[in-house]
Image 1 (cartoon, helix red, strand yellow):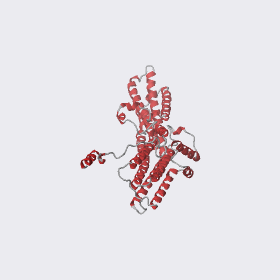
Image 2 (cartoon, helix red, strand yellow; image 1 turned 90 degrees about the vertical axis):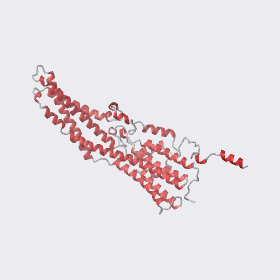
Image 3 (cartoon, rainbow, N blue to C red; image 1 turned 90 degrees about the horizontal axis):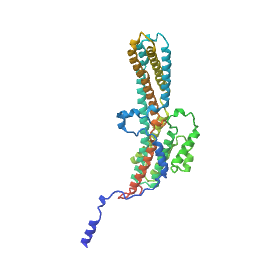
Image 4 (cartoon, rainbow, N blue to C red; image 1 turned 60 degrees about the vertical axis):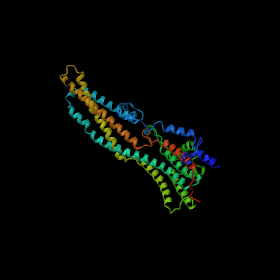
Length: 408
């Protein structure tokens, strides 16, 4: 008998070497009722151009010069400005070429005219780019903090053994807040918002916001909740008031530690963390750089472009006069004029073009929820958050030990 028992014990697997999770089957829809077709559509819309997903090795090769999609060179507004600048240069060149004494123009004075603003404009653009990148990273950091707060709140509820229904309600409120924030911030996102002259009223914006939510995430909000939230513009922030109140109710009911405990303070700190991140994103998105600063910088950039256009036109006209004149006594100066023409082309046309690109890049980066070229992939981040919440639920439901429970 003892031999039989030892044989049976020898055949039993070692529980410590078994996998933590049993074999799980995942349903087509997630815990929050998200439809797979909707998830695929949102992922595709957010992946039309992802400004943060690219091959970094491409940057250090010459191939990057020929990449147009998503770059600053595929913007029509820059090309229109440079076309106008080229037309001005051609007009000045035709006028200069028709003057008999144009050859006596001093080229060094022309170079000085075209370059005296270059250094100043370049320095101001550098400051503007730095400020725009700070705003972009600030928006990304704030959005990631909101998603991390939702994950941490779910983890705290699992550790305290709160009922699944109440955990799902907290998760649903957090996801509803994040999706409403996403749809609100990306409501006017396009390739070139400056060309869109249609202005929508506040009522139209609310209606569009809720239509997008019901189209993509119909099960996140109940009809009674929608009736209360619909009248408020910043409803995604007010949702965390419900979360704080619900957590306080659970503390009074004894499902989580009482209000005087450090654990309760930690949970409320997560709620404040989420609300603070929403406030930071909202302030960075709505409060732009002072118009007087942006206006002055833009005027300087365009004025510098005009000055360089005149300078390049003068050099081009002088060179053409020597080239096309018969028996010109100044034909020996042609090599010097050609070299001056090439230098003035680089200074008067290429440099302003790069300054305009820097200005365009700074404007796009400073508004990461308005321009598609610098758009934050918030939809993909939210879809990953939903997957993380569902995966955490599966892991919490399949453990070898008995689940923790604060409330006896």
